[in-house]
Image 1 (cartoon, rainbow, N blue to C red):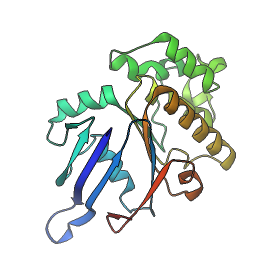
Image 2: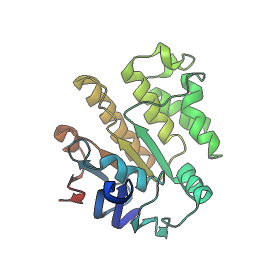
Image 3: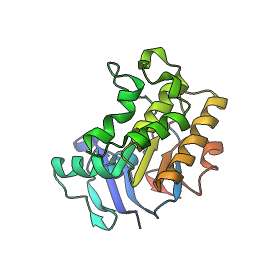
Image 4: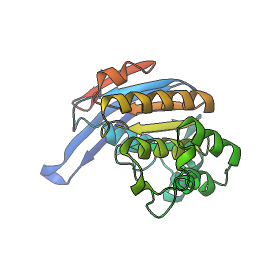
Length: 218
């Protein structure tokens, strides 16, 4: 298995105000497979992706990435695994405004010490960004910025791509184009994909779907 999640629990707040968000969530994903996590706003989709992406730690449960337990790693250990094995795409594009398209595309790969100029060229071409490589994020449309975010996440050839509502800020046509590209590029890179989305139409495009409600999967 690429990713195994077993009995994850997470709550926020203290004392009487403590609010459970995840209540014993378990799931698995094989290499190259795709999984949609659906649910209403506030259902815990983002929390689940943040835990799998090693941006946060669970209160209980275990996460195994490529067979290695990563739940108990310290901050440096989680950052190392995240840099080399996990790509992240968010609803807010989170591009670096002072970097060009080319610089943003290459950023994650350079941080991971895995920069491949030929792969960056391929990504720019496949994402329809070849003519915009020297532009800055503020000079791009929302759809173009999200394409840069997808390319940046895949530039280091991660084993796992996590996408949190990646088309939530885009119109329907642009959403379809970005999702098409993300699925194609994940297949090319051999990356597994877990996408949190409120859109059942988008979820149906992935190979499997689970629904999160009341902190539990169904």
